[in-house]
Amino acid sequence: MNDVARLDDSGVPSWLRTAIRSTGPDADDTLATSRALRRAMSITGKPRQAAVLVLFGGSPAADDSAPGGLPADADVLLTQRASTMRQHRGQIAFPGGAEDPGDGGPVGTALREAAEETGLEPTGVQPFALLPKLFVPPSKFDVTPVLGYWRAPSEVRVVDQGETERVVRVPLTELLDPAHRFMVRGSLGYQSPAFQVDGMLVWGLTGGILAGIIKSAGWERHWDRGDVRDLETSLAAVGMTL
Image (tube, rainbow, N blue to C red):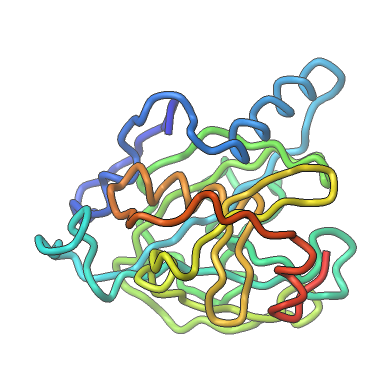
């Protein structure tokens, strides 16, 4: 998590503040590749700006008996894009999207898009860090992940079925279960950390961001990185497609 831009983290639980500590060179090929593509893109054109909200909820108090102090009720907000979307259809993602002129930067973009997609109340969210931008080749977006703590969780739901099929708060204990973690490899050799939870396959940029945060925060439990599965087969196992 190099070059993290820290915002006001007063009131953010100690178990979550550790998610943005520096860990040295990127250990995750997904994020390293994305940043390399961004550098190459800057030579030939200007990417469009976008942001996603990486929103964690959970008790303010750390659990001293758990790795990284992670409380048992900690979770992260994820969405499943509609299968009718032109790009990234059916994929699991963080709420987010393209920057609008009135957003005032990535925090404004992430909160606006999250409210539009999930119905959450932005005033209950405390953004506390911006991760380095990541380039997404299919859409040519330069995506800023905005880390947030859900101080006052509100009801979430699918707001627009034409854009989103599902909105879910995923318990981090399920993501961290070694039985739910493996690597996926695409037909062109691309590899990504993956999580299979609640009938979903979380992979690609979303999986890479989660894997990086989990490692940086010290929440990780040992899992088999040598378990590499075919991407299309893994997607089909949960009723998803590329």
